[in-house]
Each structure stands twice: as structure tokens, then as C-alpha cells.
Amino acid sequence: MLRFVTGRLLESLVVLALISFLTYGLIGLMPGDPIDVMVSANPDLSPADAARLKKLYGLDQPILTRYARWAENALMGDFGYSRLHTKPVTEVLWSRLGNTVVLLGLSLILSLALAIPLGVIAAVKRYSPLDYGINLFCFAGISVPPFWLALMVIILFAVQLNWLPASGMGPPGGSLVERLPHLVLPLATLTVLSVGSFTRFMRAAMLQTLRQDYIRTAQAKGASPTRVVTSHALRNALIPLATVVALSFGGLFSGALITETMFAWLGMGKTIYDAILGSDYNLALVGLLLATGLTLFGNFLADIAYVALDPRVSFTGQESLR
Figure 1 (cartoon, rainbow, N blue to C red):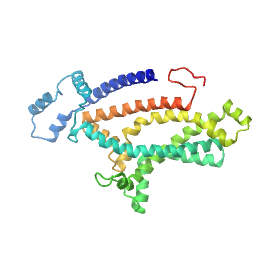
Figure 2: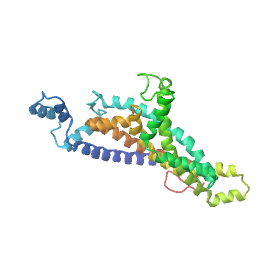
Figure 3: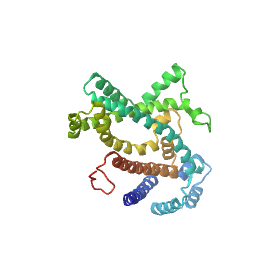
Figure 4: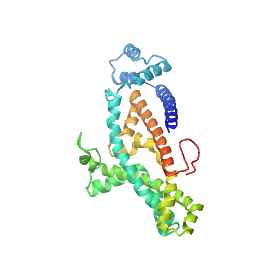
């Protein structure tokens, strides 16, 4: 176990270092920089002022030199300041990350709570009217554009019925209970958009599992249909779903740009997007690195889930005979 964790940690550090270099290079090669944006917004600044400011902030240095300086400061815990928010990057991202965790975390929990039983029912009742109905719902959820669904729920529940607020996050510094009315519509939108794909994966995994020899053996021994599904098939069918959830883990914390924009929810997606458009290099870079790191962490959790769900899998890379 310790060897596995150490190996994965080293691999993650290498990936993060490579991603940070590539992201910094791509952002640095974009046309314009923060000083150019400042000069274009203030006609009183002369070219000499722009050159002096670029030298002051090191923007006149080669990109490798600038990256080395940024990496050295980052290792010391200094990720720089956000130009758009005039605050330390960590301070900006911390509050936005919390907003995203609340929204997308609850959406993930609700999606799985719906997708797992729906996928199991569709597989057990395959080719029945119930199966067709669940599949129709899944295809609708996968196919509907996020912005269109957001507009429809706003028009219905906020404009026509006037049950819920159309956008915003509630009073500044308010508790989760105070924000709950503002959370319902974006949460419902994200849940509808994601539950369809999770249900389809769960149905496919369950159908494949129900065809295995050990399922027929359990049925031949007289196990009830409920016991066959819950005790023999469900655990193994969850393994492919664990992979899908792990791959979406980074997206969970990088935010849902369209939904956050439509409902004016200040999360990670809109923050990273605004940072890139505003040439806020530090904020964009750290936000993207955070999403990468959490994706790697999600893959690590998936490996642990494999061991917990399948006794044949172990951290040593060899099959267990349990």
C-alpha cells in the first residue's frame, strides 16, 4: 500500500510539473499581456511606461526564465496575485472552489443516487417499456444543450411560476440554508444533464455482469433475483462506473461554465474563463492546475475503489486469490 501511494504521488508530481510548464507556456504565448491590457485601458501610459512596467514584473524576460521564477515562488507557497481581483490567487480560488463544491458536489451525489437504481432497473427489465422509458430520459438528458435547459427552467420556475430566484447566490456571506433557493435551479439543471450518461454506463455494465458465469451459477443454486442483483452483480457493475466518475472528478472542481454563467453562480468555471479572457495569468494557471491535481486525485480514489469493489484486485498489481 505504501509503495503504491508513493509511486502514485511521484507520478502525480511529474504530471503536475509538465502541465504547469505547458499551461504557462501556452498562456505566455497568447497575444498581449497584462501590461498591454493596462496600456490599452489607460491612454495616459506611454510606451516607455509600458516597457518600465514589463521590466518591473519580468515580462520582458524569456518565457523559460519567467516560468522558473514562478515555479520557485509556487514551491514556497506564493502563487502570486490576481490582476482582475487585486487579491492573492489562493484567496480568490478558495471562495470560488467552495461555491463549485457545493453546486457540483451535490449534483454528483444526486446524479449517482438516481443513475445507479435507474441503470439497474433498466438492465434487469431490459427491452421492456420501463427500459425504453429510462433510455428515452437518458438520451434526452444527454442531448439537451445546457444553455437551453437553463433558460427553460428559468422561464418556467422563476418567470412563470415565480417559485425560485432566476440567478444569483443569495446574500453575501449567507449560510447554505439562505442560499438554498438560489441553488435549486442550477442544481436541477446539472443533475438532469449528468444523470443520463451515468445511467447509460450503469445499464451497460449491469447487462455485461448479468451475462457472467458466476451469475448463472448463483441462479442455479436457487438465489432469489433480488439477491443475485444486489449481492452478486451490483458490486462488479459499479467498477466501470467508478472509472467514469473518476474521470469526471476534475470537471467537478473546474466548474460548469455554461450553467454557472446562466445562473450567475460564482464558481471555478466562470472564474477560469474570465481569467483567461482578462489575461490574468496567475489565476488562470493555478485554477487549471487545481483542476488537473483533483483529476489525478480522482483517479487515485478510483484505484482504491477497484480494490474495495473487486477482491481480485490488489495494490501490488497481482491478482488476489481471495
